[in-house]
Length: 133
Image (tube, rainbow, N blue to C red; front, top):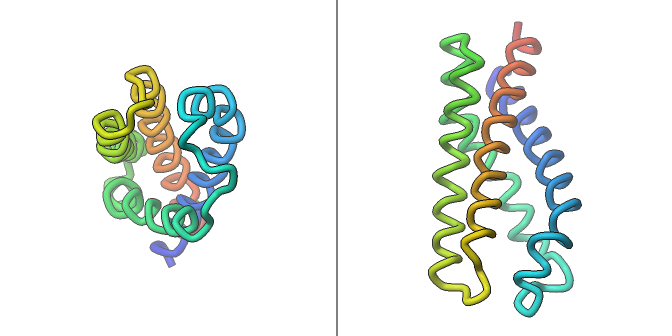
């Protein structure tokens, strides 16, 4: 059950936090910079796939190792690193290939991904430890 608790708690925290971020920042950050290339509607299948798959990485590389070592700090650090490298790959690829993608957008999105990874992994570690106890 630990794996299920870890996945579901990571998924829920990650999804809720990212929806709050996107709901707040899409019109302030992404749309002004990328308006001519952004879709007016979300393409749901790839979005759903991302939100179902990404938390697996956080669970494998951050949440479960932190639960084993009983270290919330490890969860936060490993989650931050997972978020940093994942978002860095995405942001730098976009900056290299998308004409409107700016350095400022890279920095802000990368910072968000790093914080999101840390928060999601730490919260999921706490939730899973309590539920699995």
